[in-house]
Image 1 (cartoon, rainbow, N blue to C red):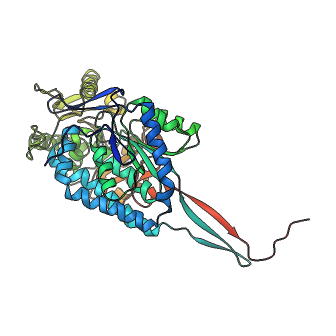
Image 2 (image 1 turned 180 degrees about the vertical axis):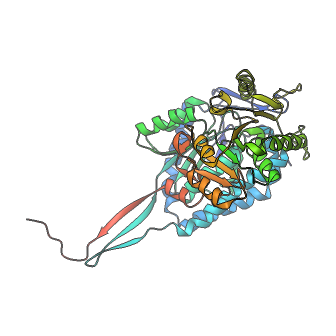
Image 3 (image 1 turned 90 degrees about the vertical axis):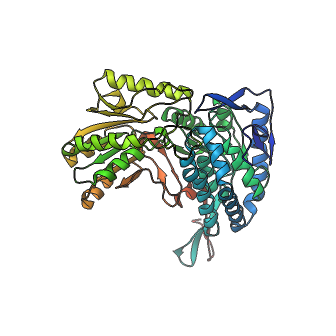
Length: 486
């Protein structure tokens, strides 16, 4: 049976669903129709306290388990997610509006990959021994941080809940996770499955809410670490609040990433990269390559092939497997995107394709392409977070690299070229944390994902994530009589 859209409770705390109608109601809207499909309530201060207290209480016993025992729980949860992928994907589609053809392969499955990967690392989470001469040595112990807070974004709610919880839990931490108020349903199922897989009550809690709930979590002195996926302005505020308590942080924020296409690139591969980097998830991906620099001799062929390929966008019922382009997740974000399109036209960019809201219920917009975009235009400088692709002309490699890096952001960057020496030069020169050569937006759990500059700090996924959810204790061992100067 499919999961009911109305959850058993708004929150998952201490191993069970709980609710408090005194909390602010949060409507859950199906983006494809605009209809309300469920309601959750924001956590009251009493529920926030209960979530943090249960996490603090449960964390020590969880950390005391053998790491391989913790790993088994995560691997069992990964198996359960894969077994229930269809129902979880339907829930994700109803929560976000993303097509089922996408959520079946990119959301819960990605979360399962993270749980499996970090569960498999559990037995390797040791320290090292360092000889320092005279028989003395230093050994290190990897320890958990304690209670971690995860704050999710609305575009990949299941994936983000798993990407943050998997490394945190395998290191022996507890986590209190707050999903986006726009897409609150999926994280509750992640908590339920983790508990079913054997995670002790209190180790992973989910609380709903808006900014005040997130602020209460971030500022609590029992919290040792904050991991946020969100916008740059939100990240600055959360980072500052965490810094006040000297908390560890991971900030996975937004970007205005460049995708550079040289005229020797395979045309269809380059167009596919631009489509994946701008229109997957209806453009609601933080690493999207929305500044598409096309070398001048290829420009018109690129635009012609791109607009031809966009005819293959099937805009329809997200639960229909034929649909491959869904609505925006919220009406507010749709209005923001339409505002940027108006600015693009007003500032002189050439509208090549799309640009209009569709006349149907829900939050639908056409895939949109601008050409003749210049670096100073608003659509080339600010993150839009919607299906808007900007094509900018360039002539030389040095010019492309300089202009690609001329931004405060530094999340991702990509290059398409047949010249692999040039591809590696570009990757080395990009001021970005995540780079792609002849591909785009592929983020398997084995590779680190993160940013530089204003797009964030820290890394998610890969072994590097373990370092962001643990700390090393250094122990000096003397083996000879110890003497002081006097």
